[in-house]
Structure formats: structure tokens, C-alpha cells
Image 1 (tube, one colour):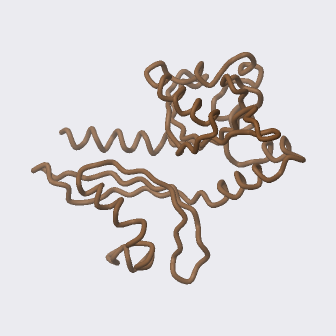
Image 2 (tube, rainbow, N blue to C red):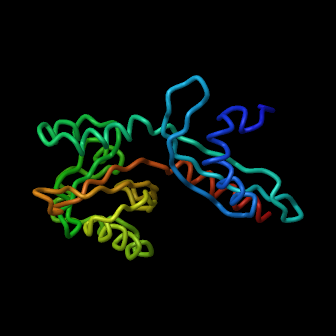
Length: 212
């Protein structure tokens, strides 16, 4: 507390990565990104970061509300999945994050235990269902666009969607997708998800408080 951002993260990381995002936030925009950052004297770590502008009573942005999550282990696990065909399902089962695999039409071909636990739906529930069945209707088209871009082999940034859990409440997730290739051809999609429900609820509460 009380230290400049550049002093904590180092001048190089601040000027190259952080500053441009903070400038967007102080212009009144919510900013989300992920990148590898290096605290001076430590090994690089990958962080998922969001900046939300805080407005005073006059409508001026006075602060940035920052939420960051260390996703280094997730990134390393994704890399191991891309490199390791043998033992593929074993890796998926033991990951600490929610994992799906889909065919190129978006139908579930695998869900790991984390997905089952967080959604509340039994594994059998996913049979014959697709990603688009679980997404809320107002977000279905944008999720389809991202999914189809992954199937085409394009690099797609992680994105967010909300869905209804078995308990009939709404949850939010952030998903990163990677094409599964066989002999150079895309045969499916790997999706790794992170639950962001608490963060989404906090951001919504902040927006409501700013309206009062």
C-alpha cells in the first residue's frame, strides 16, 4: 500500500504492459487481460487481471479497482495438454480447473470432475448436449462465434459467459478454448474454464453502488 505500481512490478513491465491498460481504465472502461509479468527478483508468473473504474459523486474516475488472479499453473497445464497426447484423459481428470472437450459441432465429449461438482449436473446430464445448450440465450450467439473461430484454428482470447446451475442459480465462468488437432486437422475443441462468479457479483455490486 502506498507504493507506485511501477515500483512493485518493475518499470519494464509497467511501461510495456500495465500502463496502457490502466490508462484505458481511467478513461472509464472496464479492462480485462492476461499476461506474463515478472516481479523484480522473481520468476515470471501469468496473471489474469481486471481493472474497473471507480467514479466519484461528480462522475470522475478517481481510482481503479483491481482484481488479479495468478493463473500460472493453468497455463502450464494447458501447455502440457497440447504437448501430451498419451495420458490425455488422465491429465484432464486431475486438473484443478474445469475442463470440457467438444466435437466440432460443440457437443460435449468429456467433462472432468470439477465441471460436474461446480455445475451440480451429473456427468450423464451432458450426454447429447452442447456448449450452446448450457449458455444463457442472450449470450448464445457470441459464444457460437468464439467457438466457431476456434474450430477454424483461429486464436481466441478467453471470454466469459453465464449459465444456470442445477441449483437454479446463475454462475459465471471464463473459458479459454484450444483446437484439438489430429494429423493437422481440427477434430475437436478443448475448453478450460475458471469460475468467476464471485468476481462478477462484486463488479455488479460496485456498478449498483455507483448508481446510488
